[in-house]
Amino acid sequence: MTLDPFGPLVAWPVMLMAAWLAGEWVFRRWQVPRVCAYAAVGLLLAGVGASREVASHASLSFMANVALALSLFELGYRVNPRWFRHNPWVLVAGLAQALLTFGVVLWVAIRFGVPTDQRLVLAALCVATSPAAVMRVTHELRSSGQVTERLLHLCALNCLVAVLLLKFVVGYWFVETSGDWGRATFNSVYVLCLSLAAGAVFGFIAPILNRLATSSLSTTVTFAFLVLLLTGVAQSLHLSPLLGALAFGLVARERRIMLSHAQRNFGALGDVLAVFLFVFIGSLLSWTGLLAGLVLGVAVIAARSAVHTLVNLGLARASGTTFRKGALTGLALMPLSVFALLLLEESRQDGFDLARDSLPVIAGLLMLLDVIGPWVSQRALVWAGESHPSER
Image 1: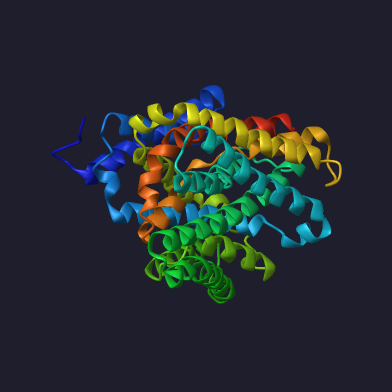
Image 2: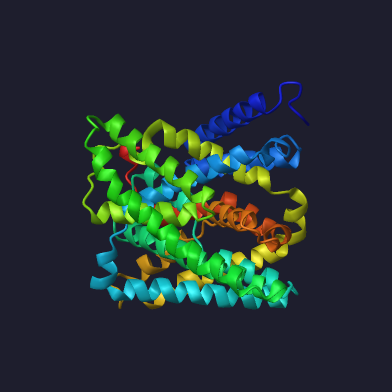
């Protein structure tokens, strides 16, 4: 199936419109998160070959990074680092679940005979939690409460640890394949430190530009343009726009930059980019990868969810919550695909050739979590009693 003779200029608007309509329909009829429908449409179009050609354009990959960077900036702004100091057991739970997830997924991959390099990539990616899915679900539910705050803080921590682990895997791969310690260092220390520094610099620039904002719309546009510029600068310097955007949000919060007047989730711009992001991610995967890695994907999902749930359940009392809310926090951390796939693509662009070879191994996992992950997060927040349906 193709959309010729019109080409990509018509193909993508048609696909995005179809995804948006599907999202509105499933949300209003069954209260299923809209992003589940967006991802499902992307997967369906990939399966029939409608999006394979247009998804390869570099400009679309840049737009996807911008869309995810907006979510990461907003997530970073919602995170309060002082909470980890006042309640260190939350930090302990986050680090414990991240490292245990890496170890358990690595063990599962060994049992399935996945090659060493690819199972390291798989284990590092599985540490992450998709900020785009988490932010969209919390916005749709207008959720607030203990589980929501823990979900956001642990999501940010998981993303940070996943980037660190994957950069170390990339460095290990460069050393093993070429013995080039210089390049290995470049892809770990240089990228990590300068990405965080770039985000911090934008956090210091933001108040100057924000003084010109006179309305909710202008405040939203100001920060959207800053995230867009940060993404462009980061990609030009071979840094991580994802890590930079997270640091930007954290510094903006620490500098007391008021975003209360900004439009929630960047308004209509955020809505459009969210549709694009999930359709784009779905279009990158293949049904061949789904069929080949389905059993592995189910096993990894079970292991990953079990670690999240058990760690948060076990440390619930120590961290100041109930066992029930601890377990629900662990379940809500299920979304993965968007952050993992863009992080893998970012590594490929930096010369990590194994990233392309690893995609078929994790395709089944990503497809499953692309659709069911946001729904599980939604259910966990609803069961925790933190959704406000009358305000949707």
